[in-house]
Image (tube, rainbow, N blue to C red; front, side, top):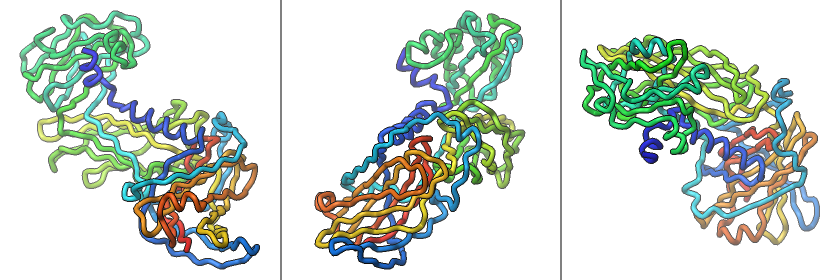
Length: 447
C-alpha cells in the first residue's frame, strides 16, 4: 500500500523537482563548487598584448557578444528594499579556487535551457455542504485519482470513510469499494512519506468507469467546513505544458512563459484562464495571460517583483477548455528563479600567459552594486581530446573588483587538451543571495 500511495497520490505540484532545483542552488551558494557545462563553436574576439615581466605576458581582450539565449545584463542596480534585506546565506570571506576534468565534453550543455512542467491535474475548492449534495468532476480518462483534503477550517475532523462516498455516472450510483480500486487515509499517506493532513482521504476510481464526467458526493463531510478536491488523471492525453525560455530571470527583465494544453481538437474553445505569480514568501501577484493560435502566453514585468525570502518563484495557473462535448480543466505550477542584478561581468578580460608553460589565468572584471560573495566559473575545451576542464573561483567583493580563474599545467596535462583553448559557459553567481547573474555559452579563445 505504501508503494501504491507514493506512486498514485503525489501532489501534481511536483514538489520533489522544486526541492531538487532549490537544493542545487543552495549547494552551489554554500560550497562555491558548481558543475557547469557547455560546448559550441569558437568565439571571435579582438585582443592586444602587453608584456609585464619576462615570465608573464598579459593579453587584453573582451568577452564575445552574448547570444539571445544567454543570461546577461548591461547594468547593475540597487536591489529593492525586500531584496536588499534578504538573509545572508553565505558570508564567508575566504577566497576559494577549484578545477577538475570532465571526461566527455559531448555531454556538456551548450546553452541555458528553460524549465518545463506538465500537468494532468486540476483542483476544486468546495464546502462540505457541496460535497454532501455532490460535485461534478470533468474527468477525461479512466482510473482518475481523487484526493479530498481539508482546508484549515476542516483540519482535525475525521477523515471521510470510504463507505460514505459514492460516484455517479450516467445516472448509475456506485458506492464504497465497488467504486474505488484503492482507498487510503491521511495517516496511510503520511506513513508513505507524503505530507498531508490526517483528515485527508485519497482514492483511485475503478477502471470500469467511462472516461467521462462523474459526480462525487459524501454524506460524512461537515457542512460548514471547506475542502480541496484534487483530481489527477495520470492516463489522460489532455496535458497542460508550461515552459520558460530561460532557467533564470533577472529582476527588471520580462518574464516569458508559454502554456499549451495538448490533446485538444482544433475546434476546442477556451472558457477561462487565470494566473498568479507566487513569491518565495507566499505573496501572490495576479498576472495577465493572453491567447493566440491555441497557445497561452504570459509576459510580465518583474521590476517590482521583490521577495524578503530566498527561494524559487512560481507561476500558478488554471485553464478550462470546451472540446466538443468534453470539458477539460487543468491547473499548473511552474517554478523559476528570479535574481536581483547585484553584479555583472565587464566585457574586458585579461589573459595572463606564463612563459615556457601552457598554463594561463583568466582575469575577469566584476562590476558590483552590492557587497557579497561571488563565484565565477568557466568550461575550457581544446584540441586533441574529448575532455574539458571546469574552472571556478569564489571571493568576497566589497566593491567592483576582479576574479581570476587559473588553468594550470597539471590540469591541462591531465585533461589531454591542447591549444587553441575555447572558453565556454561562463557563469557568475551571487552566493550571498543564492542567485545566478550571468550564463554565457560562448566566451573567447586562448591561443
